[in-house]
Amino acid sequence: MALNDILPPSAVFPTLKVGSKKQALQELSAHAAALLKRDEREIFETLNQRERLGSTGVGNGIAIPHGKLAKMDKLFGMFARLDKPIDFEALDGEPVDLIFLLLAPEAAGADHLKALARVARLLRDPETARKLRNSRDATSIHAILTGAPATDAA
Image 1 (cartoon, one colour):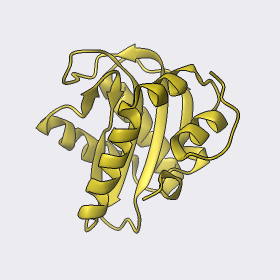
Image 2 (cartoon, helix red, strand yellow):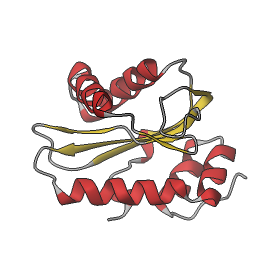
Image 3 (spheres, one colour):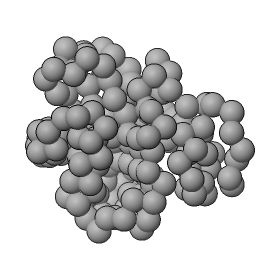
Image 4 (cartoon, one colour):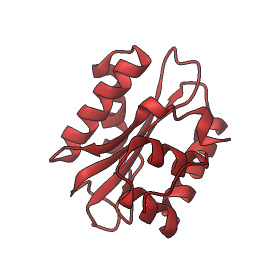
């Protein structure tokens, strides 16, 4: 599954300013709601419910909050590079500055898990993470995430 299929260029935020995990999830929910024309509260509650099971902060400054929503017809991804790292209760205790949000249809099953694995593999690559941290514009970040040709801003 190509990330280009689930991550529209409009869903990349190169300098999201938040001060906490809750605020990050609220901001991401608001942006996702606007792009998907969905209820912001529904998205936030879905993400919060998943976080209660355990943090989606996977380590190395990366978080992959995710959840499933009713009446969605396809997977949706969103990426944010935070202005300043925040405590996300990550598994390694390190602050998070790269967040990839993944929303899936309720019946997505294996597709949801494949997309999560693909995102985790990509973001855990040290060179990819370095490029994402050094890029300052949405076009470059989108290109890094999707493998599309673009100038490397690093």
